[in-house]
Length: 385
Image (cartoon, rainbow, N blue to C red):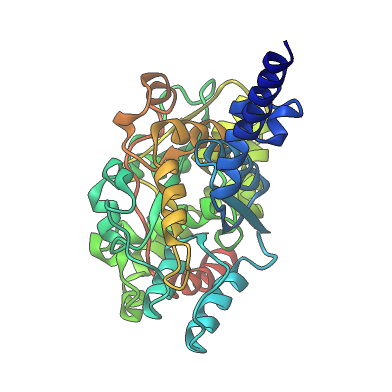
């Protein structure tokens, strides 16, 4: 009997040694193995710098946990810089680091604009991307990637459209010329914001000017193009007395949407995402409809870039690849009320139908410093008349 008891005790001790002391203390063998596996796998932390409105921060606070759950060895540190409080300083830091010969930076992924891409490209800031590191680049229209020389990923977008009261405007304009005629025939019922205070008004002004110019001029910063602006500015001056209160231009994109909401005007140019969100939240009446005209207003994507000096490119590219999945893009669209960065036909039919009224193509204006020159001339020729 003694030998059998002794043998049983030895077997139990051996089993405990095999499982580990922690396992004998109450953890299962599976838990112990999992803990051992996790402790032996190093975790990589990447820093994502982003800015803009609060809804951008809220978007990433939804996307990041979903990504980390699918990629447990990668942690994402979100560095959010609200609009007007230092978004440009992050790019300045990258430029300064490059110029000083710094070996690496703590910015592994950067969300920015087409202008940020251009400034970075001039100084060799951004890393070139391809399907080896980011396979889901195949989900993006190749022409969009070509425009940025494969240095950035357009992961969401929006455009300026017409927002109108369908009760008072049963047949909205379909072309730019029809829009201008409508404004003349309905004095005081159209408004656009001061272009220097928001992209909706800026798009209305830029479109009016560049509709008289060759299409390629919209993607040129040649100062000589300013000599071709006369026809567009003459049109804007002529329309002035037919605008809201004979030429009152509200501040910011929200200013004109407020006029539409309270019924003071029947039509305004508006960012598609702002108008869709405010209609959904009943901040705009349910009679509000959206449409795009031809030639289209301007718009554009928000881009993600990987700095060349980042030492964690592989992990950053995994996040990029995740963001370009239909699942992540569905979160982007539903959270931001914007367009997906990937092709529309990869999205659900429900979302395609929901955005049918505003998903028509838009134009991009890449005039660089000419944009500020447009604002200056608008102030003197149009607002100051």
